[in-house]
Length: 308
Image 1 (tube, helix red, strand yellow):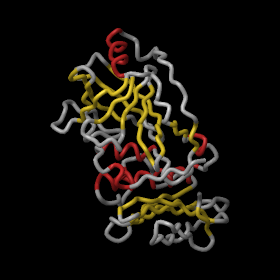
Image 2: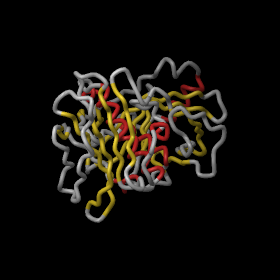
Image 3: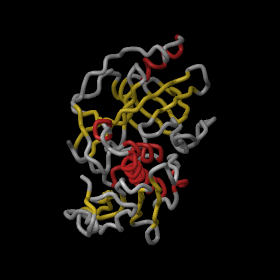
Image 4: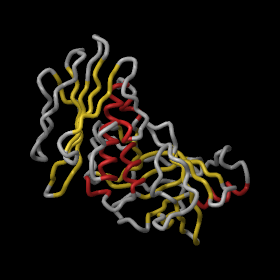
């Protein structure tokens, strides 16, 4: 199990889509299984090669694409012929790739692309086209899961340059497998984890934390059969935010998550943690104590423990 920590300044030049949606899939608060990089054969997808136009477009997409407007430390895209897509970046000195899925409709002008994100049933709907040999533009700004597809390219459309047409991820990249870490988690913990991630993404896009679940736009309802979910804003909303999952039944544990800003070597860094009650209770843990130094950890209140 390899802990992944994302520093705030790593995405400072990335677009809102890259910052927001990448963070929704990043394992920022839990330890995540890193599986060895494996070859991805160029096996065509039946659904995506239904016509010759789609076949030609997918062949042009296969490989690695670098955002021409971003620094080398930011996110690249990698497409395979069978509908897989990876977000590639270096996190905590590790070259990692986060798996997504994509589908194209080559009959439209501009062409359509649907991007499926983990933990979100609604895809990102966008448009793209090829503007030169080995160059592609994709409308990223203003897209989010569940939002309507943009009709036209904006002035700040993202332009990507193909740096490789290989159908196999570079050997130094490792694929992040989130499913293994989530299989045994209760739904309430998964939701608090998602709230923590989403708040970090929201902060990167807006410079402040969301005050309501509606602001996060991730489809979480305030109540389920077993839990009540809340966002508890803190102060001016730019230093920390608290999330709670309060059990409705006496045999369930409760959770409190926190996202906060801390300086690491003089640079701002977004961090997150979750406290779990030791025993089943209908009362979530009190607000955890935020560390003042990077070497310290979040201190959970009495009656609760810090989850790894």
